[in-house]
Amino acid sequence: MNIHEYQAKALLKKYGAPVAEGVPIFSADEAEAAAKQLPGPLYVVKSQIHAGGRGKGKFTELGPDSKGGVRLAKSIEEVVSHAKEMLGNTLVTKQTGDAGKQVNRLYIEDGADIDRELYLSILIDRTVGRPAFVVSTEGGMDIEAVAHDTPEKIITVAVDPETGLTQSDLDTLTSTLKLEGEAKADGEKLFPILYKAFVETDMALLEVNPLIVMTDGHLRVLDAKVSFDGNAMFRHDDIKELRDETEEDAKEIEASKWDLAYVALDGNIGCMVNGAGLAMATMDIIKLYGKEPANFCDVGGGAGKEKVAAAFKIITADPKVEGILVNIFGGIMKCDVIAEGVVAAVQEVGLKVPLVVRLEGTNVDLGKKILNESGLAITAADDLDDAAKKIVAAIQA
Image (cartoon, rainbow, N blue to C red; front, side, top):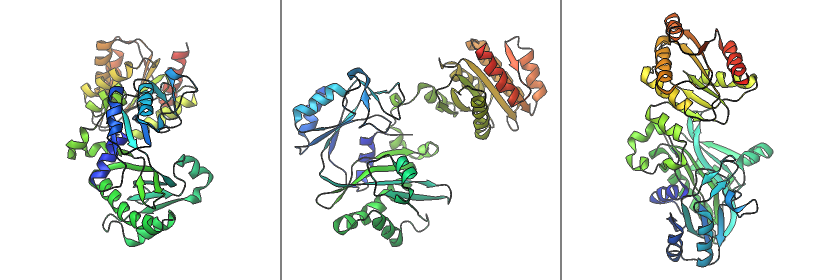
């Protein structure tokens, strides 16, 4: 689950992190009052969407020469002008895709005098099974590009969850980021704060880019990106309330209600499988034969008929889907249950695109019998390779 920058900063501020004063707004009429609450004379007007690269983005309605989604303002009048241009328009960034995202919220923030920009994030390092800080002196930049071009400038510090951050960890972090004097003292306070917030709220990612050293020598969290482990949200009703469903794909929202692992993609072949590894293999072989998957949909190992039917309906609701491939290996999940779910869904919503089904495993013969006797236009496949060839051929026909 992702949240907006202003929500992330409010959360971190509760833990004691240094953030600038700021006010979220939802209409241009609120811009002047919001700016008047801030010290000024420099303001920052920030689009609030769940995507990176906002500053370099462009607004579709304002043309290719439009200013980005993060703008400086040197007066209250300029804040209002930016707000009128940005709210309600579509911001396209490198992470939104060509469709972009409509800006429905802005964050009006007090400006900062920046001396240096640093990068900091906390995530789970699966190579060691521990939370880890990832830091670099190259803040404010595309961290993937830094990792590719100058990997020596990125340092990872894994934290032992039993001891928490040690003085040795802090020394490594402050040394790597070249913090001295007041900035070093601030870092030794800030890093434990961020780690505590990460652990206590079950974050999956906490990214501060940039973490700045101001001209007065102090640190400030200038931007914050936070996502949470969805499996842990039953412990955090207050955080669940921060969810902005307008930023999410409607199909993914519906899938979450059925506890389906669903991710919308840009291709034209819908995929329904059981097991993440099988899903990856299915998507790979679709690409091998020249097409692109429209989704990642894993119904899991113990889904019932209703859950399978729900997954099928979600896939068929995507207008980009020109064909569907169901690929099930029955272990705990029985092939006849999958077949019953598919038949029930097709009978309810209809079948307007080719459907290829490959079943293998527990009750496979019964599953095939159910499909064959359904009277529906379902193409059977013997194995995954055969299934991929058939669905690609079907949508090309």
